[in-house]
Length: 265
Length: 273
Image (tube, rainbow over all chains, first blue to last red; front, side, top):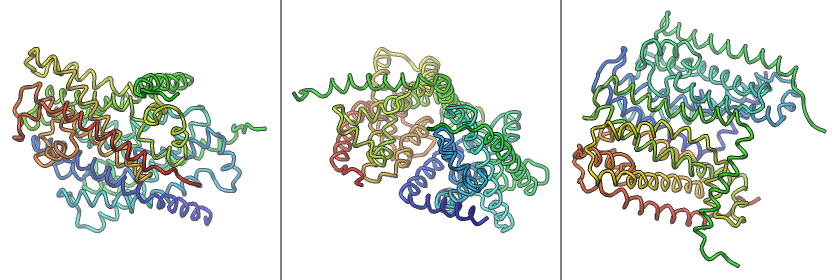
């Protein structure tokens, strides 16, 4: 366990080095948040209620989406693991007396923790200062939101881990990554809140793992979950996806390591 | 013998370097195809968002979907073509960090051309397609009252918009001469600018429109050209003469981008050891 904590700390320290990049990230996320929020305000000005959402709900979701870009890595970056598989450095990772999945998870959680504190919170704060966001008064709700962010981070890692693992089977994973990085954000609710899509499309998107990255945390914050069991049900849904993706990742790792061939002289 | 006229040389170097990268990318045809499809899908998704938004709202700020497609098309075509031609400049910071920018400086080709063609990929053309289709459709169906003057103006407006976008792209990249890791700042005006200019700017209200008219002149990419083509008065009451300004704004911004690039290049002192 100690080794994973050390890896987590390394991940945290690594990303905390890039202060200017973090500030630039907050600026960009905030600008996109402002643009998307103004589009949402214009839509809801024309039609005040869409699928149970009002303007404040939609604007709040816009900033949840921007805030989740950091911890859940909805727009990337992909794990370094992908490059390491292509270049063969993964052999070094496999020699370590640590589980490959757990090693990279620890590293990514370090990155996510830093991103949450220094990217998500400032971005969301900008949104709250400019627009009247829906901010619950109930501390239990905030605890649920925090849990949802953690679970979204795990789901985000699970997905990116699978994208990287594809490298064991396909030599060039950039195509797979490109497709995943486009479909993912749309299904997550980054492009538009899912309630704006036609109901059958929205239902399919909700059933896919990406919805656990943005839409489900936003629903929990807004108290508008579509799942049975309300907030608890929504958290369970995220936990289920996280567990499933990590289990698949671990199983595929075991298969992949049996077929890895390290080239070299 | 020193080359007396560097401009034509840059013009021949650009396609040559771009072609080299194309043949390199063609070594992975499956990846290239998937990338192109992915870029196309991403741009189509953005266009889809506009349809979804207008399907719910009907008209926004006095504009319907057909007029909105005109603004989208003008913005998308300008941004995606400049992204295709010189989007790679945004990786300046990476090159500085890795020392590969020094390599570019010692080669006898403009470093800007080398930077713009670095990892040049035809896949980015995928992004251009939805914008081109939307623009072609909107030019026919947005209710434009075509006069010879308007027909003649379309290419001028599109070229001006591309020069404006390209200049913004270069200026944004030059930020990395000063703060190497702050590459993402540029995204807020390049990709962010595209996202903003895809909608009729009136929906953002007076303050935002003033900012993108007089500070970061994104209004001259799609908003003012669109108003001109539609023959609509400015709903926010800015002077009507602004709609004739895109070529002037493009020229000024081009000069500014050239200046900022030169200043940045002069200030560049390599990464050291």
